[in-house]
Image 1 (cartoon, rainbow, N blue to C red):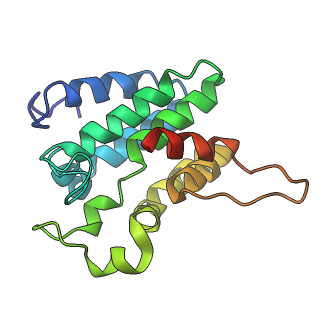
Image 2 (tube, helix red, strand yellow):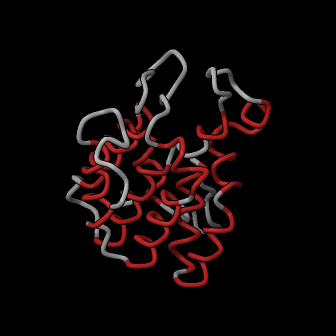
Length: 174
């Protein structure tokens, strides 16, 4: 990611600020997961330049990366989070819309997989191999990332959530 040109994203400072935020992820397996995801050729080719939506928020080149950075920065600034929770929220913020890369055609029409699954589940399914690698290093982190990327969690028998963090990226996304 450091080898990409500074203008990889057409929105000023988004690339540099994203890399700086990734470096703040203290949990090494999670930092590696985020870096590896954004280094993937298929993802890297579109993440920095595509709009976040066709007609709504951040509907301009680089909007996806800019919006994702804004969400992650918002989450990183929440002082009530512990270290690994903050790390998960940063990663979740940066990757919460990653499925949009596969959701739109080149002319920003919704593609069939996205119509069927939504961008959250599409992204989650596309990242499964990388999530399995993360799971080998940090199982709880991989489970939490799956919940964060899916945008939904399910209650445990005792009434608690597997990841109480799931509401944070959703709120920051608004």
